[in-house]
Length: 348
Image 1 (cartoon, rainbow, N blue to C red):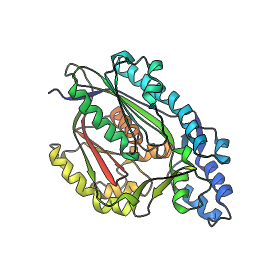
Image 2 (cartoon, rainbow, N blue to C red):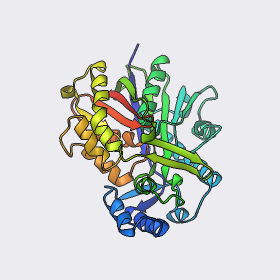
Image 3 (cartoon, rainbow, N blue to C red):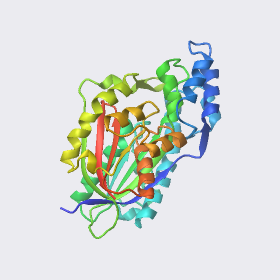
Image 4 (cartoon, helix red, strand yellow):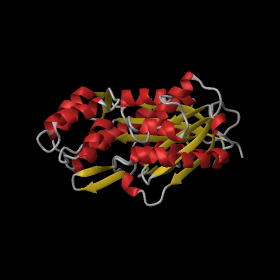
């Protein structure tokens, strides 16, 4: 069976930009006097390693309270346009049209859409009526890598028919001014909005990075590490302070299981391409993967410019790594709820 190749990759963000200093002052206003000291709030934002983030709504939208219907309406309104923008750019890069696509994988965990996003915008993209659709919810930050792995399997199952994968998250819409907690403050300082799209096809006559072995690792009984809580006002973040230490202690074992199955050793990897997670997660990733301190430079660039956009973030990093060139195979990896790790070998 022919391998699958990535023949088009695009990344996009919504039009509004939030400066991290402005976000810190908004957080001081919202949470001040409710158990979170202004100095501590400003320090957390300053130490986030983030300069700015894109957002689906203008900055003033976040000054007002919003219930779940309002948040999800904002998600649908912004997600439709962002999906079309990302997919259209990927089509252009791949040299195909929407009617050529045989299957679509839509990854998103920050809003609810039924019908799902690709169905809502299928006419705008020119998708065929017979296109096969697979919406995926609940993978969080790991969704971009897991979605690429799914697209690879679908492409190999139907050689010659392109598969579109879109990972889209509007994390900022989950901002919870009603929760004056440390974990909510961390989320307020960390998350941004964005989308990534790629076209994958099994056709050895085409050029593009080859997608090799893919795998996932789920640690049992680790659900409290990361995820969503859902109530009448919307999503509330689940995020434990134990996350970076867990990554440093345990994620190496998942990588060590993946590498030989992918035909690799640590020495043979040209570069690990990682979802950056956050300022404290990056050193933990470097430690568990046996990398030099500060080695994940592009991951830090993406985090600084866009924040943590959840599922598409790893593909933002991959785009920059491919553009700058690297010798040897890549290992694309991201962590997500469950708690889980997702891996994909890519040969540029």
